[in-house]
Length: 294
Image (cartoon, rainbow, N blue to C red; front, side, top):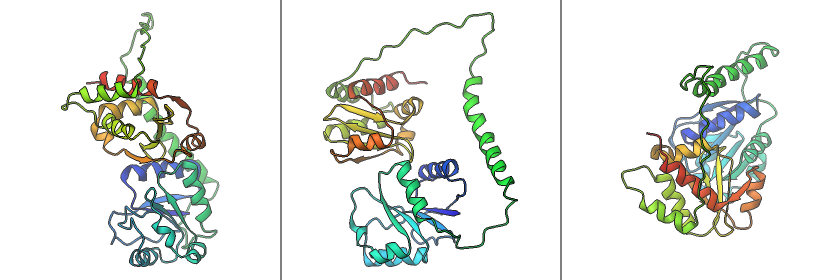
């Protein structure tokens, strides 16, 4: 099943390829060059970010352009958060052409379910020549191991080598002080302007609104924060959070969207994101920033 990705950012494309490669082995991805007028290649299924294709809001012209581009193919249409204009798309068209509108922010399970629901039973075009069926899983498995092994092992073995007879020093445990919302705002405001602090500034601005929000680090990595209830939830690894706190170029790709107060905790649970005290989480982020690797 060939899936064409259109209008997604480079980070989202990478995450989507990982998602499909790990959970949908019968699917394969192709990416489409950015631009509203770039024609869509022939594919069995499309994942199309409406805003990324210059179609953020529905209109008759936008609808005609979209449907003409899809040429009758099924698609998962990714709409901006809280945008309801695309619900005007004809219900008959949504059913007959198998179109699903998925609003940002969405979870892994949401996207996977949408892909499975819209995928046609038969490919729209003849599949390219492929090796015999038994060989396909082997090729995929080998590719995954070949890519994954260097990434996981390189950081470990690149550390300085210690002679076996010399005992490793035991690092003293680091105690990270929790920070209240006011203390966090003050600490962020006191950081030098010449130093990286974009990610912390984005959080500080969102926290000041006193309403739940979701931080999209990538398609699969998220943070959900509820300042009023004083909790944070995350499925983002600590090394990645540390990188966000220390590198503005990494933080530039992060987006933040408001979340309904009634749905914030349930959303965190659906994404298997454990809740933690907000003050401890903020203290950890500031600790990451102040202990920046140079």
